Length: 98
Image (cartoon, rainbow, N blue to C red):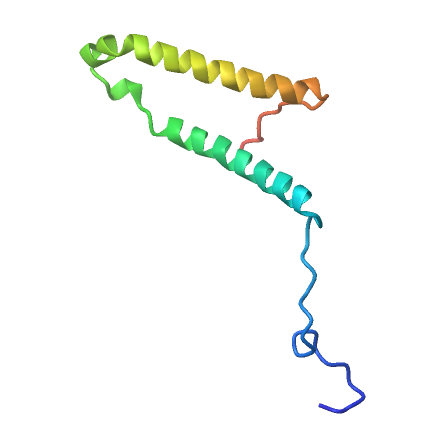
């Protein structure tokens, strides 16, 4: 390397500046948002695995109270999150089919 050529940042001991929020509180908030979205996606995937059509009537009847309570709790939480988004003026839209 010639003496008048700029040295690469890594060779000069400089690290590239991180992309994204600069202070630790902003990074924490950003990470929390990403984790929240990941939890929403995980909930969708967990519900995808449930196939009530394959349950026999006896099992469904036996667990109906617990199933109903869980479905109501899920509905309440989804409604809470959706209403919070709408209250800030953002629409909830269905993704376009591929």
